[in-house]
Length: 305
Image (cartoon, rainbow, N blue to C red; front, side):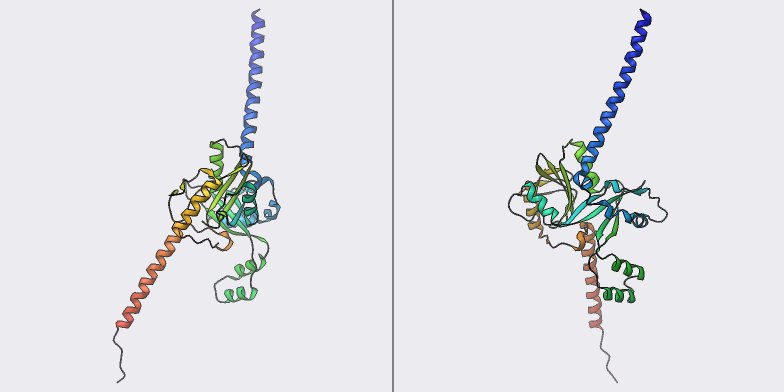
C-alpha cells in the first residue's frame, strides 16, 4: 500500500512538472505574440526589408563612436516611419480608413534599432533625392563637402541610404520602445500600429488601432517640456488618446504657438532644445555684429593731409 502511494506521488510530481513546463511554454508564446504585436504591420507587411539589408555594414560603421562595441543591427524590429504627414490638418473627425490613407499617401523612412550594450541607438534610412552633380562638384571644390561625401550623394539618388544615427542619453528611449512598453503595460489588443512624423508638429507619434478605432501617443511636443493643455483638452506624454480628441487639442496648440506646418527636408526632426539654442545663437551673433558696426561708425574718420 505504501509502495503504491510512493508510486502515485512520483506520478503526480511528474504530471505536475509536465503541467508547469506546458504552462511556461504557453506564457512564453503569449509574450512572444504580444511582443510581435507591438510592431504590428510595420514588421510583418515587409514591403520589403530586403531593400535595406545591404546597408548593415554602413549602419555599423556610422554607429561606432571610437572603440565602442556594437553588437548588431536589429533588422527584425526595424519599423517604417512615415514623415511629412498632415495628420492633424483636417477639421472634421476622421475614421480609420481616412487616417490610414493620409498616412500611407506620405513618404516613409526606415528606423532600425542597433543592439548596443550601453546607450540606445537607431539608424534612420531614407531614399536619396535628386541631386545636381555640377553643384555637388562645386561644393567639393569649395571644401564644403569631401570627395567621398560628394560621390555618396550622387550615388544615393533613388536608393536607400543611411542618413544619420540617433544616440539616446542614459535612461532616455525612442518612441518605438516607449510605445512597446505602454502597450504591454496596458494589455492593449493592438490590431495595427503605425509610426509617423506629424507635419504640423514635426515630432514622431504612434498610432494604434484598437477595436477598429485609432488612438495616438505623443512622446514629446515642440517648444514645451512635458504635455500640453488648452481649451480643447489636455494631452500627457506616453499615453494613448482617441485620435480625434487628440487632434483638436493639437490643432489648438499649433494655433496658440503659431507653429508653421511647413515640413523640413526628409522629415528630419529638430528637437525644440536645439531649435532654442539656434535662436539664442542667432540673437547673440546679431548683438555682437551690431556692436562691431556701432564701434566702427564711432571711430573718427581719417583725413588726408
